[in-house]
Length: 137
Image 1: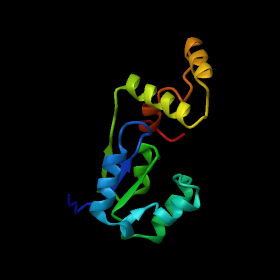
Image 2: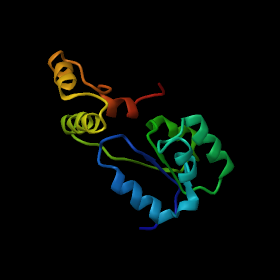
Image 3: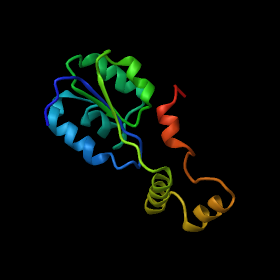
């Protein structure tokens, strides 16, 4: 896979985007990715806050891939002709995956998850895909 354009991968959590992210990273090379793996490691394996990632972006004008759990609107900070890629997933399947992730990480118990769902509340942010695609928070 080879791209001539700069790329923004708006990685919405639990949409099965990790494989695509890895392919994009491999295609452009680690040195051209923002936020860098070093910056992610510094933030305990998580994407850094947006202002930190944007600072690294300013320090690396030759970037080829800006990726992370950042909203679609972040593209306003990127060069005009940046290719934006987003993976969407059936909302019900995405929510089930998100709940399973919380259970596997021990962030909640199955009883808490079921209680939340019975009360009409989602254990995670509702309409997460819409929030990522909408305007700034």
